Amino acid sequence: MALIAPRMTSGLPADDARNLAASLQDSNDITVFVDGTVHRLPNQARDAVVDLLGRLSRGEAVTVSSVEEMLTTSRAAELAGISHTYLRNMTDRGEIPVEYRGTHRRIRLADIMAWLETQKRKQAATAAGDDAVS
Image (cartoon, rainbow, N blue to C red; front, side):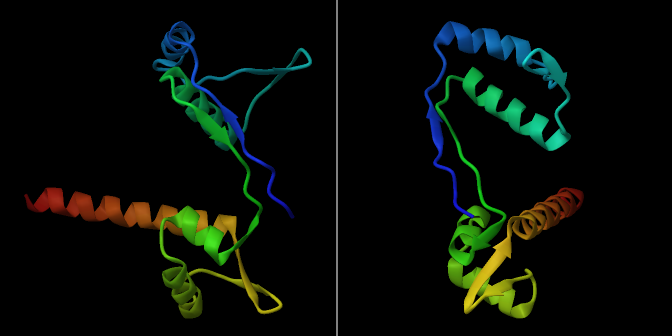
């Protein structure tokens, strides 16, 4: 499965950015119309659209790309913000599931995202513990 080339969109003009920011303030209700038909987005898609619109409302340039479901260890490490070697060691220890395509390791995007979520929870718990001690 190949990656689709990213699409780059420049930031919005200041007036458009202000209007969008005002519309998004205290709201994440996004209505999508396709050929005149209303579609309710699943939560993950809605969150992605709100994030995209929020960035545009701040005048930021945005790049949209997609990631294939099965990742190379290099791509998985890049997404996780860790070194390739550290990721390979985690797969060797069984901390992150891995599949082999011949001799090449492949990691599911969902497994990397689950690991990242676990790391966030651990950090939040540590921070909460530090606040209780202070």
